[in-house]
Length: 308
Length: 119
Image (cartoon, rainbow over all chains, first blue to last red; front, side):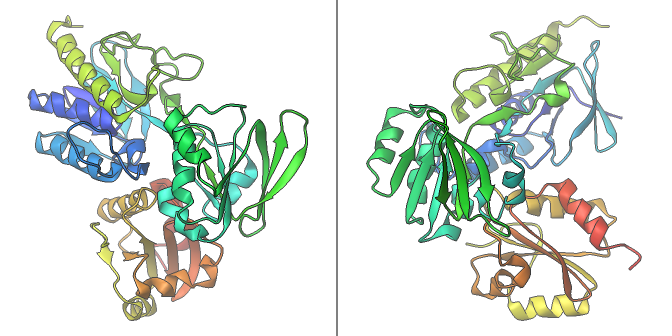
């Protein structure tokens, strides 16, 4: 069994920021993540609106945060899914990789996973035409026709970036309007390589060894259309990675962690930060803000908590 | 671009061929410093450090290096459209190849299924 003052679950911008604040305040901090350090931000090709930094990549930004956290003394544990949790009482405990970790406070900064359509063909053709990262896989589709699924900022911005490679990009969106900001919509609409199919749902990805077409169904008249495509990029949002904490803290119907202004959850000594908590705007800057608040609240809690 | 990972790098097709000829169990992740590749390098590094896989040689190779055409042109990778391309050789033969991101558990599952530490 290993003891810390605070355990931060999740090593994205929210978790790393919390770790930086806590470790700098001489707290013993463990940051544990079920996957690699960085969270969703490593998927971001260009970060242009993070104050104080010129344009950088998500990977570079998070690499700097990671170094800061480690330099201040945080212990980082990646690829370590949590297998057991106890938030009862003043001592919280978690089990990861067969080791028990205890702390006075816990910050849940677990982030989210890219939302999938849940189709069997989506899983089967992942890496064989289906992708969730335009930066990574865009150049496999040079001169080819592809489909982008989604209508938010990521979908439209990545659709534009994919026109660097693809001969034609068809954006398929389930609603009759976009959720993206106006400037993203305008840029996509003005790109001659981008075409739009609204109010339609993906029924199936077809192809044996690799993707050959995307079958969609109109929500208006039920008409089924087959779009020839060798690539399909899916950007339909994220789902919070809160399943392991279902019975531990209060979640809403969407699986988001409910918190107060101080990022405190329904359980004393347990705080939440970043994309996994209920919030309206999910940005790197808001994740960093959450992490800061959660860290300060956790320190306040530890200073005032009564012994068990 | 170079690969900034703690994994030993393969830098030529000749080196790769020699490795898979003289070594029983080899895993090579061919990618870039990108978000789908980093978790695989991370998993390989941890599996190396955890122990239990001393019978496997872990390597990475830069996808954009012309020398990595040896991997990109493998029949087992012909349908791949996602980075990284990860290939597993046993006794010089490809026993498994995957495209796109893999978790540590997935990598571990393939290693356990493909490379018994007795053989």
